[in-house]
Image (tube, rainbow, N blue to C red; front, side):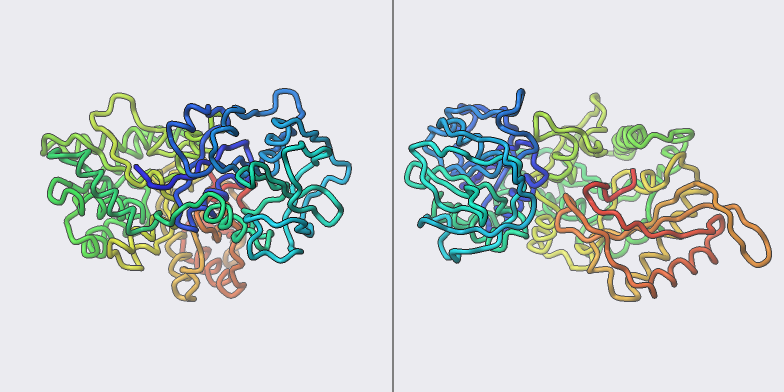
Length: 513
């Protein structure tokens, strides 16, 4: 994807790195995360409008701490170093960074001492979020103080007339009251960026690029019923029309009545046909005895492609496979940072077989989830299609803890259906990012009527989020929880206990596997 404006974020391992990218994109400027191993030559070739150095868990003075190609600082590109990134800029110019005995973690008062475009429109005193164990003891001679925190710690400084800047605090988090304005000031007053990252511009440029890449070839697209694949299919169809063939693979691990939704509401909304192929028995047979979540994902990912190959044998000449891979998929599968741990491999990122017969077409891979919905709205898809909660590619396979069996799938489908229906009934579905039930095949003792039972546990999960990178558990009312729990226990055979998950991401993930 070619962009007129790009801001590169060099990642030093901060839990907020993705949040920096989100904040910049919210201001209609394209941003992308690159590993800290990036070279000055790489930066020069990409010709960004600005560079941001993220925070990180290390100390700049620690042995083996991540570094920065020093020539990046001399490229003449506006730079903003945040926390650890600020410390790197300091050490490059001979400043002294030392452990701070006060170790600020949390709210602090920002006291702006000198004028800077970075603080245009910001009051002299403002609340910011500090998260560091280091402090700048000696400022290099070519730098000037811009702000300090309430206890005198250097909070912001600049050099080169304010083209290179650093903050000890985190402007990207909501706890920094004027953080969005500070980032905006850096983008537009310092780096002179333009707002060219919009749903309309993305659709226009992506359609052109799909047309160039595909030419006269044919494209297969896997439609799952989720938002990502619906937007993907609509976008590709806008580009190549009848060259697109959409296929829905029923792997037997879907929500209740999902094939009916595909053939009804979704086809009507898309405006073109989607073929339905049932491979549920094949998938379930391959998963017999498999309990490890990564192995489940690998098996489902590989069979997903094989099923496509089988389903499309009646057609020839399909060169491309459209996939709804998103930016968080790339990040969580370790595909952005050179040192990133694989949180979980996504079936459409880390589980694809090497010998598949398609070339991948992934036009959404630069987008966060909320951006996909904005693009879908631009394409004319209705809100009830775009508002569906995310559903994992491996489906209920990663919502059944342990071995997958046909009986367990049926139990979970019924419990999940009861939960989702209640959220619609009480008009809270759209307040929630993602909600689902999990089958925990740990038998617990219960009493139903006058008889002792020994049955399965269902866990309910509902979270709020913007893009799935972080999430908080949704405060569901006691009334809803009581109704859902009572109905599941009384109408779903094999379940005698229901619990509600109150953990956030991080430290937990949204899905259980």
